[in-house]
Image (tube, rainbow, N blue to C red; front, side):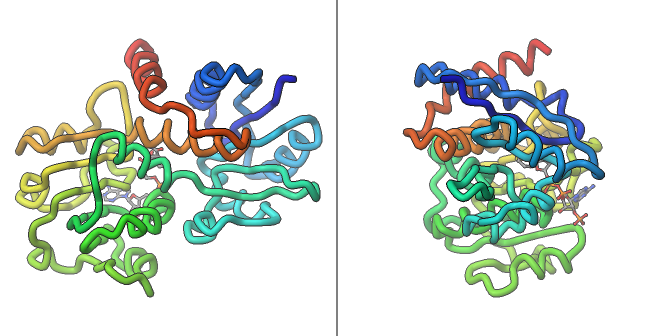
Length: 272
Ligand code: NDP
């Protein structure tokens, strides 16, 4: 029997989620129908309710509705509570909706795929918006030695770091030594801008990861590559990783294979 899913967002026409989930379904021989569902600020909750009443077995939620999905869910996973945002909705036996956030695990799956081990590492996370909130707990679970958190608006970084061991908010770049992994969780690249991080720090890091992804290297990655030669990765693997975790939750199955799907999505992105 075909199971129905969708992704709610605005805009949504660009979303690769249907493609990704169809590729996962092929791995298992599952019958799936996964659609894009446009919603707006006035009808998001009503649209979700209507689609679940119709036939949905699950849904993803993307910008700008992740926080509204959090309020809508009748139960929340620990990760979603930590992030204050939901990107995955799962119907419950009592006709409610379980809200999950799979972004953090998506990033961890990708880092694992890339053989990037966080244990004992000195990490710099740039940004304190939804993406940073969504991944912080999962990153800390991997026991880095220290995680420095930098955000353009420091108050947001302070709020995110509050009460978390091993997180140090950057107020003075001189405090940072031996950073081995830099993760850019800002949306600066979307506007062709760069977060204000010193070049010498970026250049000294062994690995740089930009959560944004594109057909060509992101502005952040292009900048890093213009000053040094660390291993650089974009967030396409995280996108596929978070989708894989949603898929696993909905179908109650093994985690789909991520690597071949990343390659297929990358080819589609480049061909676009
Ligand atoms: P938000 O709007 O919630 O947060 C934006 C963040 O970027 C804030 O920390 C903001 O700082 C910072 N920022 C924006 N512009 C600049 C700038 N010019 N210089 C410095 N900092 C800036 O966005 P999200 O957190 O949801 O998304 C962030 C990025 O992560 C996006 O590129 C998004 O595409 C990507 N992402 C990727 C995913 C994936 O699966 N690969 C999943 C989720 C997100 P301030 O607080 O000072 O405004």
